Length: 476
Image 1 (tube, helix red, strand yellow):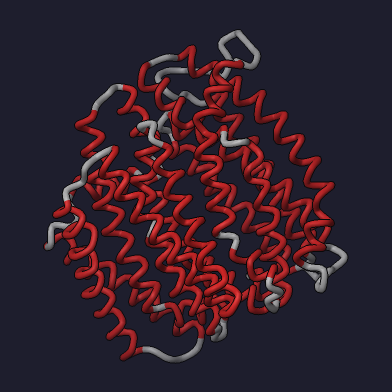
Image 2 (cartoon, helix red, strand yellow; image 1 turned 135 degrees about the horizontal axis):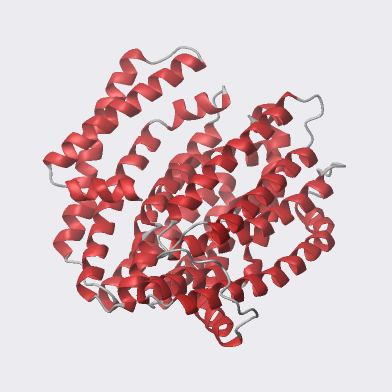
């Protein structure tokens, strides 16, 4: 919708401005990373007093950081635009960037608050709120789409307003909703910032915080393209392909998101046997879902892009296929979450370091000479190397996943089942393919349903997915 209203160049400018503003997600100094772990530990130990101190400390610390970041956004917006958009400036760009910077500051606050829900195993409540806010934001974007003056400034204001409502709703329900065991208001009569707990939050989250910044640098592909002065329509097409991969990776992230607080709670109880069970189940499920998702995306990238944009875009198709390797590394993200939950954040940090080194090595080889295709290929190769290293360190330091499980459940059976399912769907789509955008959409939808049914049957027959795995996915 945004692409069609703005056009390729306008959408490319929006993608760059949105990516620049995304750096303000890091204003919390990694506090949100520690909150989920400590909330899970306090809840697992039944320490209600510790939970109260955690909530209060996070509220005081984050409030000051977020206000400071919002002021910083106002001062830095114009210099940042000058570096990446100096040849394509537009009157509404400055205001749009300011609004998007504040939007990402509020998003950081939302992430921190949602971490409390996750630590208390109440992420379903936060998810319902997110879906409702998403519908509200969609309605606002529709009104913007139908307006006579669809400026970037107005679009950014819609995102900002939705984030503000989202944060208020999360905080309100956190204070009013029964969470944990019984009614537990945010404050128990005491107030103030616990310096010792804040230090623990920062020290725990620091390594992860640096890791996330490294990941952000490595995946700021739109900024790489802006840096080398790629055409805006090419940036727009790249952004569409990257969004397709990101949406598929979100499915894997949703599955493993509850793993982190669960691992923290099990570590607090020193239940090594259940941590091992959690690791094996997480790896098997993510491999099963991940190979199917990205096999389908790779085969049907062209019709998916056509349905999304209403036209062919070779750059978007190429980007989606090349970035599939990066999306597939979300399989290793579940193991990284478990490592963080049990206190081995250094594994995540080292794997990010591997990705950073690989990107530095690949930058002159791929990115400069090949532009969008080089950026996508470099990101996939770097994160595949990082994921394999993370798996090796996880096996050495956390849970020694058997090699047989890695081969059969992580590679052979998922690839075999995905090949059968997606191959059958592709054959059927070739018979009924062609036509206009609506016809293509129906074909892709039918092929997706057919592939999913065949994959579910073949995965059950091969023993890749079990009854308790399906229950796990539903709970996620």
